[in-house]
Amino acid sequence: MTSRRSFLKATGTASLAMGLGANILLGKSNSLANGIIPDDLTKGLPNLLDSDFLARQNMARKWLVELEIDALFVEGGVNMNYFMDTSWWMSERMFGFVLSPDHDPIWICPAFELKRAKELIRFGRDIRTWEEHESPFKLLSGIMKDIGKPGGKLGVGPNVRNFMTEGIRKDTALHLVNGAPVTENTRAVKTEKEIRYLDVANRITKLAYRDAFGQLQEGMSRGDLSTNIRNAHTKYGAAGGGSGLFGSASAFPHGTKEHKPLREGDIILVDGGCSVKGYRSDVSRTIVFGQANKKQREVFEVVREAHAAAFRVIKSGLPCREADMAARKIVEKAGHGAGYETFAHRLGHGIGMEGHEFPYLVGSNWLKMQAGMTFTNEPGIYLYGEFGVRIEDSFAVTENGYHVFGEMLSTSIETPFG
Image (cartoon, rainbow, N blue to C red; front, side, top):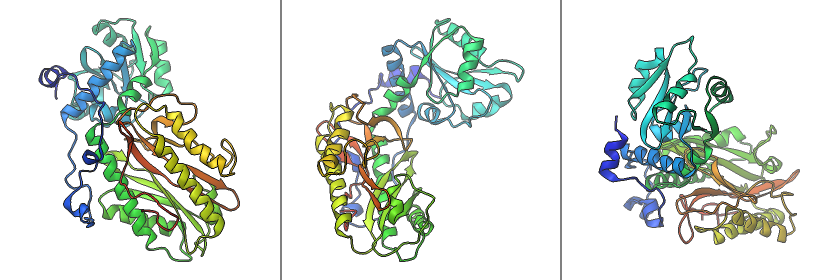
């Protein structure tokens, strides 16, 4: 275990915000630069170190102070992995940690799981246990007293389940508040390592799609395409996949029960991704099997221009809503309806350890982007009974613009990877 104090003495409190340039994002090898694609693109990626997790904990402590929250409680799930490098299944028994500004993490654990917990917990030596007939929630009162905040303000992590929150309310006198601003603001700005993982993950998914598109055959099923995409992901070193929608089914943004075999002239809309070092890709591509007709080509070009319009405005300091509005104006100007009439969803979402995470590119979000925030840019037009088109690329915000993860932008309906 590494203590917070020893890390602070060695490095000082870390700041995760940074300016990002394409040269540090890709870390390209000579083989990639020469157009030679190795089978496993994940080889040579750096691992996360204790210092990375301690920096995350210290950033969360800064947010606790900023938001005037005395401590944060987190149970099993992505946030536990993110802050503590600890995985624990979410059962009916309380297991989690309390993080406060001036103390190492304090854990709550079922007594019979203590030996296992000691094997897994890497940060914080104080593990408080409860027997099966006891209330684990009461342990929080003792923890808050020991950190000098009896009856204080406890932030509840966004993934803490309702029965635990209600149990804390019933068995303690603590003032419970929403802890999501602490976890979300900490996770929103990615480090150089996280950016690199995301870049490689998205590159792999794009290469996997490209390989699978080269195997299209008339009469194949959606399942056949999914199998080819999954196998290609494995070839490039990641577990992942993608789902394809053919013809009129492509008008359903997240799919339909309709299953028709691939036919000449069908739109194919593929969406999917993979995980590299715990970080997700999310990519959508739209192509036509055979020759695109006039309407397919026209709608595709509107979506491509909406995608480009969003990228033209993106930079650090831009309110998230402005990117959504820039793309939506293109769709409306082209005569495809205002608001969500055919462009039926927000422009994009945050991406990192979860495929969808804070913050969001939507018209109601005035939050200003920061360098190191990561999002998807995925405008679409959906014409029920006919077809749908979506183009999606994940990217990092930089001080003066953006960097597209995995590059390979779609430049036309015939060239989905540039």
